[in-house]
Each structure stands twice: as structure tokens, then as C-alpha cells.
Image 1: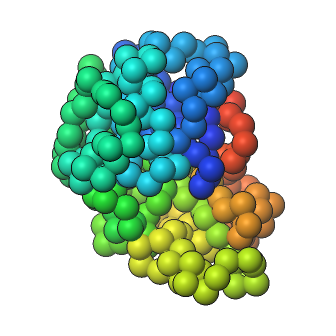
Image 2 (image 1 turned 30 degrees about the vertical axis):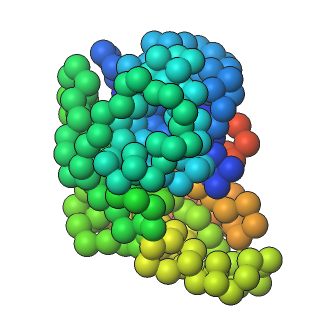
Length: 253
């Protein structure tokens, strides 16, 4: 299994996952031309992708879904609630399949398990992609460390994990108090420390963690990495997904 982040953050999200028989994109918060170019830079053609799977209706995850469908003929998979909340902004689309959180989507020999999250979008989900014995998780926009998340994470080989904010930077930053409370609240985002604690508690099998959805104003890659290494281990294999560019291609071993 191979994967790369095409961009990750409140300015736009898109993740590519490839198995022997399947090519998938998760979220469409960047432009179609940017997604196409960044995949080409990693040696892939966006027209080979079989499906676009949306995590939830917030614009940084769904804004270009209609463009992806029309321009590249990608079928869209989205929860019923997120579809109702976002369809008016997609324009004309021809191929939409709605699912409920908890359902398993099958693409050839690749399974995508959808996991409901308490994030404050409409019927948002996280994902576990499985091909043969390898499992990759996409756990961003989580809301909080919800019941059962440990069981999912413990069983993964690789993981995109939200590490959105540093509490001190959030408290001292430019955001108004109501927005700070929303970010740190039960429907918001996971902090660096919370993400690291989950891996320390759950991650004995995981060989790669890609810290994702870092805040521009309330976090920094160096701070996220330092927090992670202090709580988990200095030698643990972590990467940080960029807000501004693609990552290299990672192999889930």
C-alpha cells in the first residue's frame, strides 16, 4: 500500500491511497489542477483514481468535489448528512453514492471502513483502508478522543493523525475566545499532546504516523514533532503533512 498527502490543513485537504488494484482520493479541499499536478509530481495520473471519498462537509474537505467529479469523472462517496449539507455548492454532479458512517466500502480487493466521529461537521467519518493484511488510518477532524478510537488505532500499520494545535499557542494566538473554545471543545480538533498520548497508549503496531491538519496560527511542525517525541519516543517514525505542498510517497509496510 502506498500513500501521499497532497495537502493538509484548514486551507485544504486531500490524501491519495494506492493498493495493487485500487486508487483512491480522500477529500477534495484543493483545486482540481493542484491535485492533478501534485499527483503527477509523484508519478501518478488522477484519471486512474476510481473514487473520491469525502470525510465531511466542511469546505476545506469538500470545496472542489464537484470539480473532481466533472473534470476527472471521479465518483463521489459521501455520507447522507454531508451530502445534504454540501450539495448546493458542488454544482452539477452525476455520480454520487451516499453511505452511513459505519458502513464498509469495497473497491476491488480494498476495503474502506468508515468510522463516525464527533467533529462538528455533518455526519463526519474517519477511515481505515485495508488491503490484504495492511491497514492505513485517516483520522483527522476528530472532535475529541471518542470511545472506541483506541481499538481502531491499535490495529493499524500506518496513520494520518490530526495534530491540530498547541494549547499555549491557541490561548495566546489571534483567535477570539469563542473560536478557541470551539477548536478545543468536544466537536473541534485534537491537540498535539492528545494525538501523542493516543499513539503512546495505542500504537505499538504502527510503523508510520503522519501528523496532519496542523493549524497555521496555533501550531508549528517543530512544536508538534517535539511534543510527540517527548510523549512517545524520540525514535518513533513520524512525518508532518504540509499545509502547502505534497508529501513524498510513503509505503505502508
